[in-house]
Length: 208
Image (cartoon, rainbow, N blue to C red; front, side, top):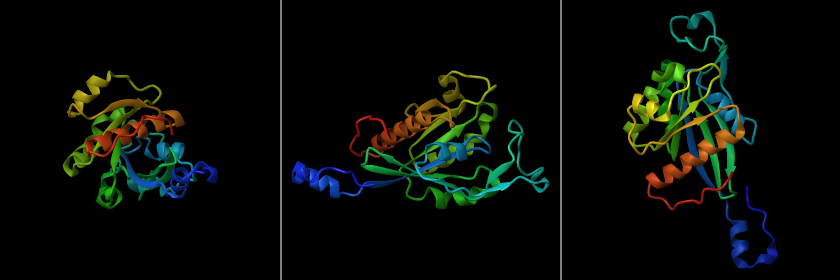
């Protein structure tokens, strides 16, 4: 999306109006049923692309649904959405599949990403360990966003950080994957953290 500035504002404004926004790839990762598809769908300004299939009896004993027994579908490839950030950046959001049998796709989904959001569920906190380990090994900056499910026990963020054995510079925050403002704030925090981590020019913390 190109910023719609007037032609009467001088050469500097004209140059800005002609400049295309920078594309930024963001990965949304985490365990099975943690809310990745929900987050992408909530925040995307376009109709999100989803690759969900219905869970069948054939997945019994393969996919662990403890704690998310009501879940009826699962992502088998990726989720995809888009969000424009201050007219300067377009965030392309890629949600990874959560089950172990689809982890082989993570390399392709994560290639070229500025950073990642690792969604966590306190009822199944250990499910986000593979995502944390994966991005740490790749040197990909990430934040941990604890999705606040109804009825789930609430923990102090410092406790969660300790339980996940995260480094002191890894941001941890609460979020609600169903709320647009909450998802946007997670993405803003991630972009600011990732740009600082990579030594890129800082952005002012403004709304999306």
